[in-house]
Image 1: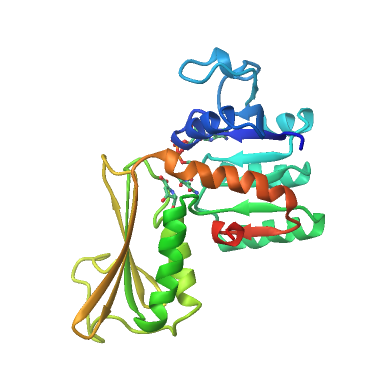
Image 2: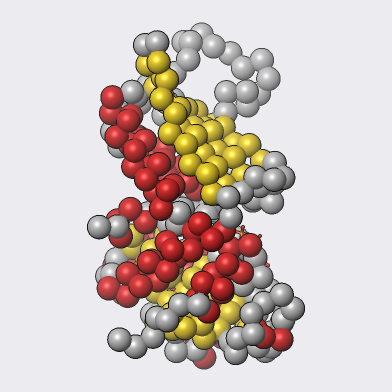
Length: 266
Ligand SMILES: NC(=O)C1=CN([C@@H]2O[C@H](COP(=O)(O)OP(=O)(O)OC[C@H]3O[C@@H](n4cnc5c(N)ncnc54)[C@H](O)[C@@H]3O)[C@@H](O)[C@H]2O)C=CC1
Ligand SMILES: O=C(O)C1=N[C@H](C(=O)O)C[C@H](O)C1
């Protein structure tokens, strides 16, 4: 089987660096170029702190995708740029594997339509860590039996989007199996705005941002005289890399957009 030719967007970021390393050490994936905000025309090996790889760096994503014969774009930048890069990739028949979070539902719908019109695949996964995918699936199951639930997500303080993509995806999965409902006292009032967190159909999401954290989530279910907590912790960015690898391989066989890594697991 021939190599899967990969472009990474955001190679100097926390996730991007881990992805460059993962691709470098993988036999099937081959890094052909990177999209960065700086260092146009340099090779990755000329940039301090990055592996000694001969992949060209572009600041212009369109130019990168036009010049390079790539199969997959691994997108790990910011919500605004990530959306633009994902669209461009589809326009160039390059399959996007998107870790970037913070896309709106309209953007996701639009990208899904583009995939369907073109008949090519894309993977957008709010969380590539297998443990987080299981946490979401277990939460969906638990919500059928314990529908009163709140989500606490905790991340490093450099994170741009709140709530996290994982928390939103968890809430969507729970929404699929439970009726919208009032949680807490019917007459409860916030005396300090935001005290009860964000609201998805009565389900509260609380976002914590602190240095020292990586990516953590607790889903707490309450019932009569009992609570159940389903908790996941990512302690480093390597925790996401087996998911990025799996998605980069599986996207080659897809004809539509897949939202969530769970759809790629056996
Ligand atoms: N799906 C998942 O499993 C995970 C997703 N994420 C998401 O991945 C994204 C990146 O996260 P981090 O690496 O922690 O952020 P980061 O801030 O460390 O890295 C982002 C990088 O993108 C670069 N960048 C920004 N605009 C760019 C542009 N126009 N072209 C090229 N590069 C550009 C920045 O220079 C920076 O190096 C975030 O949206 C985050 O939520 C993070 C961890 C896991
Ligand atoms: O920004 C991060 O770090 C992470 N972002 C993703 C999210 O928003 O859920 C995945 C993981 O939680 C790490």
